[in-house]
Length: 284
Ligand code: NAP
Image (cartoon, rainbow, N blue to C red; front, side):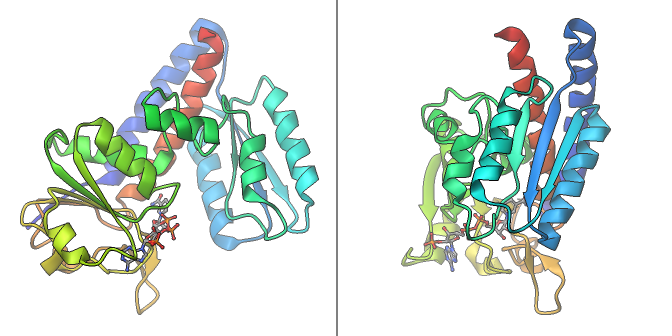
């Protein structure tokens, strides 16, 4: 039976560290990290994410600034707000909750955020830095996954790593971080001819497809580390991952649950990036 990687507990440790670092930053420089979160529209899931981010900020001692804009907000108004926040010295991180309404071009909005305040690390400048390994911010979900892998004590170096999914926010940066840690990395996607064969070779398997329970027990190498990024609904409407936990936990060496695995780490890494952004204003 696999050891369960407790994302909630590991995220709590990360947040505790950030809380202490924040107090030290305040006493040394008088700076309190500030995160601005913008939500356009009324998407219920996005509202929950924004609320969770606000309470995480309060927990670690950050200032949080919330901007709830109506769904019909013109793109120019949103970009204006971002430009104001780019200049606001109390704001160190800016996050625009995705997805945005259809009339707003996501790319233009991401590019309007100053790369120095881009705590999601979605701006092309930060994406480029991830490729070269010279980054200040890492995208929160892949960064959280790396911490979860580290927590197992298993070295990435020399391991065969398989990432299933190639999105810009999870799959691609995930593969790059594993590569920077000297893993031998394969990226799979919906056009991969024999997914089972690829997955069976993985010592470390990271799955981010948005397809409920698609990774089954017969697709996993015995003893592998299995990280499930998915946040899906099963046939009964219950939250589940991309990995069939019941089957795979009998084969894997380590496995993340859903919920309580990658999700809490994503928010912890957002706090870490915001702290880093604030600290960089002192170091500059
Ligand atoms: P996405 O943009 O929809 O990308 C999904 C990827 O999975 C695509 O690259 C797609 O391949 C691949 N894929 C889909 N079906 C596949 C199949 N049958 N076999 C192999 N590959 C397949 O999704 P995302 O934004 O990366 O998110 C993935 C999941 O992670 C979602 O459930 C999302 O909710 C969750 N998520 C969780 C967190 C968290 O904090 N826990 C954060 C972000 C995302 P193609 O490119 O060929 O289409």
